Image (cartoon, one colour):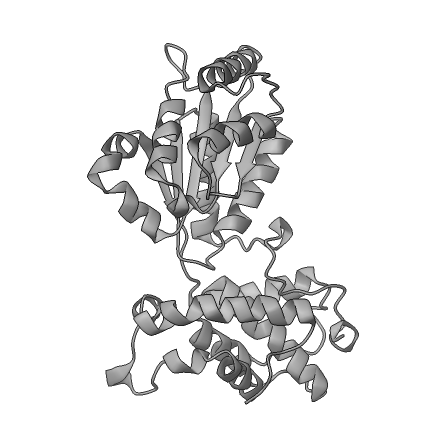
Length: 318
């Protein structure tokens, strides 16, 4: 729709996690390195936590790409709403391990045998679970027991648990003390700074085909407005920029100006958490990021964004 007008080859702000668009800030590079280090040195359990929309799934996809490049055996479970029996079924299926019995003990024996074979060949096996905050206590206990699959010196199965901050809270409960004690590396994602938001937008436009030497697509003031309303959350940055491109295309506007961003923010009710301009009332991004109004609004906003994207249009204007 707007790609030709802006000289783009593809949609630069798609909400679907695409490893090609992973924006490597210093924090993200450190996090990715920590995840790789934990897997390669067989640390056992590693956690990755961060608020919704801060790039956890995109980071996990990049991790999967790197692991597969090194011939590491990987299993990625994105459906965290499962029981203990389903956990073992999914793990065996992802690793392409065939077991004729539904008995958990038989499945564990098959898995252990397969892991030992990988270990003898110098290979590593990794189990990654997304949305870990939704895992039940029984499933988390089974995950803890999977760490018992080991040699005298090495863990046979490396486990990455990725989830929202609620997962950290759950891990602090007394029922999960033993699991918590087995976590060797803890990684986190967070919002972008103002400068990072600017670079993030330019990088995605460049990957999508924008010419760096051409006329800017977003004015500097528009980029700053995106950061104010998004609070540096990548998924909300994508939301604002995607719909700003559509609105600005309709108006044949280039570069995009702040009013377009403000209109989109109003469409999605993000103006309810707009920072005030006066220095004495200015709240930090971290404070706003954790504000009740923003957290309550974000889920609904992203839901409407997905619906409008699939329909190919913006939400109805009031």
